Length: 584
Image 1: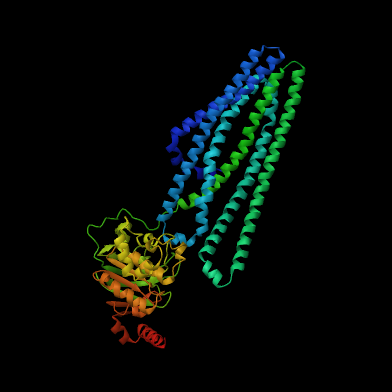
Image 2: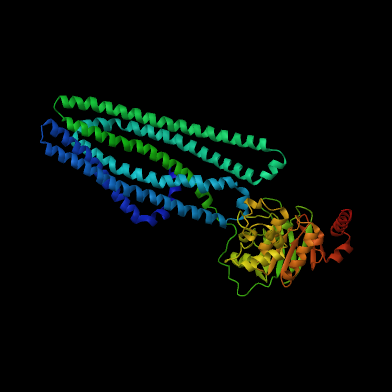
């Protein structure tokens, strides 16, 4: 393997050091397994030579008993060797998977926008399995080879140094074959893993978007697209299988060649009286034990190549630093937030080289005020809302809560003080109770029921056979769009935070339901800072102030009445919506 591949494996050191004792006992068991394995051909030599010399049956029986005893002892230590060394690999896989998942939770939204979900799923499953195989069978057979090889050579020399020399001279041939095939395996396995990630992505996207696919009668197209990806995956796997397929017949040929050579050369020595028949039998046994490490070495190199590729892919993600995190300047809040929000000349772009989404935003929201935010699609409303809980950081300028820069407030405290309902509602494949109470540290049925009532969802829930225990299906597949949005609203209301952000949450409900929800949550909004983003202006007309965004800039602001009198975008939109309601 290359130096770069080895370097990727260094990151596993901290995990392996946690199991030093288990590795030590496993290593001792491995040595004892090798010793007693090598003693069996030695005893076989004694028995065969004893038979030829006419030894007493009792002596032969003793040799047979020792062979059985050594086999049992070898089996005992082999069990502990495998149990400990393979067991460690399972535990490291468990720890690494937990760390990988925990690290993903710290990464910003921009990371997930740039990565396919299927790729991350592949890393957390297929690639971690490859790392586990490296740490388990890979390390175990590598150590076994390194221990057994020199010991076996020693026994072979003690049996016949001439035959041993002839074997050692030809042995580099196996190493050349193994190294060449291993390089080919490395390249092909990496291609297989990348294609597997793409297939995972397609499966995830198709299952998540099954409604859209079926609604547009695109089932055939989806199946064809998946088949093309699967065909390429099969092709790359077949290329990998061809290289792997060459390896085993090649090793079998070399094994047979070495065995034929030993029988010929050893047989001549037996005929000439230079070696006993028992010695030749023992040497053939030692040769078999010697060839196994050679074959195992190729397999181990294959495991290390695969594991190194996979660990490199995992490390690539693990090395990514969270863009949004607490710093040395972060200080825990000394008192509860009142809810004052201030934007001070804020600019924002999703990427450093990308276009500005928000430009020179300056506004102040007093504690307990309800603020409406309206504008055309893509004007930056949701982007502005995402900056308050630091789902993204500003490009320039500053946002302050109660006079404190939000970067100085611990992320967990900041977000615990904000009830945020995003534009894209997400529902987990869990019970309604779990979805509404997601933010609670401990389950509280009374709070869950109250939040459902305020979100105008209680009647719907009580109509379900299992009520709050109803499992809603993946992404809320069994719920209507309006029910999902109301569930998201109840999730935000349940903790009664000082700041509430509703990002176009009424788009999937009719006007009557919207007004019923607003009527119910208005008492909860009293004394809380509320930011309501809406396309339907009826949702914001009662706000203390309303801001109109256009291309990332504030172009109008004021109360509903003041904005109507301006005759601008807000007034024109309001008139259109009134006319639309009358026509309905």
